[in-house]
Image 1 (cartoon, one colour):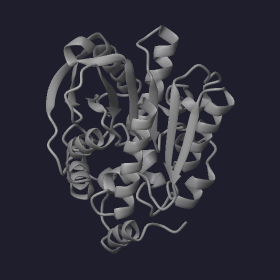
Image 2 (cartoon, helix red, strand yellow):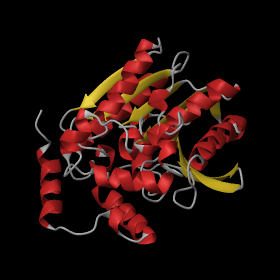
Image 3 (cartoon, rainbow, N blue to C red):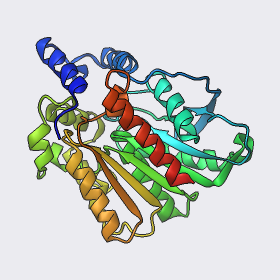
Image 4 (cartoon, rainbow, N blue to C red):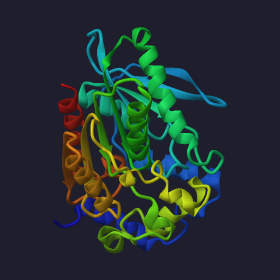
Length: 316
């Protein structure tokens, strides 16, 4: 399938104005640019959503979480913990605020957006610990939040997909809170290609000029991982996990023109081979991070709405 024309126009504009990407800017400037671009290109909320901010204790400090209430006054509500993308070093609640509002509105599922700590200040595996702590906190405060502890889902895009996977695996290993489902959007399941390991066909095909470049992924790897050896750790590259059985039902969504497409598909296939209930969809005309392009592309808007429907189906 051809690249979505509105996404193609965005990429053409970027190519016509060469300059530093977010990975070429000083750290705080890069974070500000990522936030500004995400809001400028992202979905625009068209309805009111109630929100509340919460403090979540984590090892060595605390993080924020923002709860977005789906429409309706029903009790014992389902909830999705959402882990944002940004290569483990970019992104925050402000950048993902509009997206979270509309995901809650369109899915009918409350969203708890987790503001985990970022690299390079907090290297691997700090973000994984923050994600697990957020799940534990939400489960323990289910009564205060008026949510159903038996209907907690995890979701995340890109780096956030990696955190969702790790949180599920840690919960399984340590008898942690039950997770009903997970929805993984163009997830990072294998860091090895960005630290000297074997590549994928999709990286070779789309690793330059399709929004997420190989050079930027290598930059993220250097910022997040303590050294190249970390890329071969199961937590950094959960695709290496030998036993993926007994996990909650999982939806893996990729983009047709994304260098991470094939590792996402490989993770789905590994889940299915292990007997885990898994579903795979590829948004063929999209690039990486299409959730953040729903304000400038009708195709990305449709893909966003499809993700919301998949989340709703997984939880109902």
